[in-house]
Length: 216
Length: 302
Image (tube, rainbow over all chains, first blue to last red; front, top):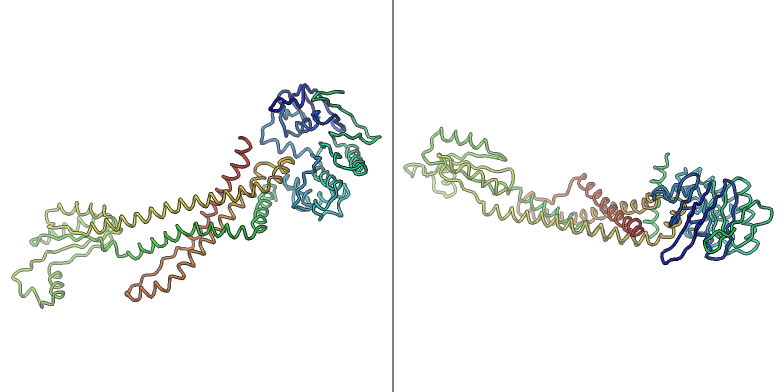
């Protein structure tokens, strides 16, 4: 599903975020990227979501070379990817339900269908009772669950999560990991960057990055 | 309903919300834009009204063609044929030498002059009125007719007509210049307001981009906002202009009555009001488009 071919990513100023990455992730896999801060985990996720382009090499997603993708085609690529951020990136002037509705509005779902899907996504993450709550009134764990609801609402085959439990205490973090395991079991491909250890019992692959190179 | 209509409905709804969410800011912007748009409209209507007042102007710019006193019936007929060939001729009036003498007698209260004079010294004459106040036209007529053998003299008040024509032209050009200047002001103000909107919604734009929003999806609400703002400013300007002339209508009517005139303020037809409001909408949209292009496209590429 995802293939990196000799991918290098250098930022202006000479910082080498990724060097010579060769990597393949199969459909339905759950991959956890680990490594110290600045190892290149987030950059790797950004390359998969076409938020960044590689300096050299190719990134393939579903047999499509996304490093050569036209700018206008990128939004359509991202509609098939659920993005989960450490800082949640929620809209604080909209309630929980309307935050989850945003990807469906973008994709052009009818209002009725969109509301039904958004409520189902909120239910899945345990926030249906708080659909009218503004994000500011939610706890950190709830905000992260809301971010996850927004990521899964359009039922994408691929979920990318960048340090999803980074700011959460252990109980909330385990809750989130449990959710990811459920998504994995339902056939979703997950690529997660994390400092934490995944819960035992989940069938996942660990990939360690060290100074922009694959360490394992 | 297809996705295209849903997206446009969503964008329009979003634009309306943005207008309503900041009612005072929206109101002040609309009043500023409305005043800017109303100024050239006020001037244009005033000018048109003055032109209407000079509805008699083409008559004032009429020329008189005098025949030789010894001109024959054949000469008169030949001249009439030639006059009928003139372009933009609104009205022609033949004044025979007998009629002219009778009029002169009446004006001077000298009784019947024809009894007192051995011969009628006055010539036959044609008074020709053009359809428009155009000194070049009456000049051309004068040149064409003055060379005819039966014509003694062609007379017209062309200097006066030229001056008035120049003044009206100047007024028209001022209206156009003022329109362009204040129209540019409306575009600029709309661009600034839209730019501020974009700045205040940067997080939403960034998140929308990350989860698959196209450039059209992001920019559409801002373009609708500009269009709505322009249309509402057009309505405001129309209300200002209408109110302005409504207040003036009665004093003008009283003044006109005192001068035994039927003069009244000219107000545009409904379709002209609508066209003006639509044009304001286009200006608002153009300003928004410039801001979107500058902030969301050019700045990202630059």
